[in-house]
Length: 512
Image (cartoon, rainbow, N blue to C red; front, side, top):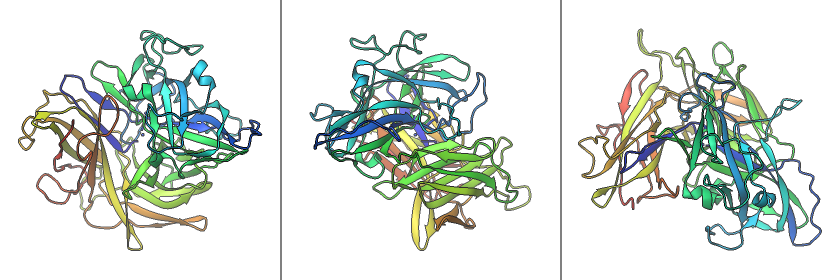
């Protein structure tokens, strides 16, 4: 999402590079907003309308376009022109624990089973009124009434299909595959799929905004599945790309109500182009996670839609301009859907003393993985976290990373490890470019936003890494998440403008 760094730890000399889409890969699938499908008359059936959407924060408009300033998940070589995936099934289940082999999965777009649909995740169609939310309508269906707690999206494998294929295939040039990316130089690359993509990219209960999808008898709902494209692409050592998707979902408003605003400089009130804007909400631990992300346009504007009905988000933004001016993160808490925030000011970092750096800071570090006494292969998603205090309550949020972050890295067994690494461990390193200033806090109430100045003093961070299996995408290691708020000398992890700080090593064990 972006905000997260992807790290590949491998036994063999193959490595992966997390794209900043996000591809956070962040695609959004929506069960169509404002659908008009007729309702089933049967007492036990309801209707779901389905479509797909995504803010194309790493899209290039023309070949050779320069890199877009996407936070934390900037595309390799700059940007992508297209990201094509071929969807052959979208299913839902009422059980939160159902797995790939469980019965009871309901098809949400039955026509995909016989006619798979190839979707460009970076293409938003133009509209007459300028409101663009949906990539593509995927149809509607009737299904048994109930509360659906899981959704899964199944892609067509890149191998020659034994069953139906899409009517046209825009990924044929790399070898007649069905999932691909087109980079900013108009070169098409295979988008490799993990086993998870073929058995179902799952959206678990914690990633369904607003709770389970409630389908009532005789009623219709519009469902949104968000595919965070730019945060979901890893570049392999052979030049191909692998899909490691980030997905969210939720019932959306038929009028596609969203959250919009304009990012401006707090002093000049001039718009900031390419600022990173995220919608975040708390996970089970209470930490804000990025749910959607985009960059501002030439006038500093941003807009997220459609959004889950009744959903409330914290809007977190920061910026690093082409001239090198960094802006601190601004956090606007408790913003409901249907809100226009107007101008959201970001504060430019200024030197504390004459001649001091005004640039961002860098946090670097090492992650190790081991299983018993042998090294282990993992994917690790690395995030930078900051905290703010409002009315004596602390809020921890994910900091959108600047595009200069080397957050997508290649790690092999031959990568040298620091002296502190466990014997036999495989290692990988990350580098997160982040604001070297404390965040500005905003609160939204009664239709207006109140902004308070950033706190003075040390700029403190925490770094979190989450380990997953590179083949299946499932969590692995015990525990599967590690966090540190210390630097390599066991002091508080403090970020300084223009300087690089080394975080304490994060060691994963039990990575079977």
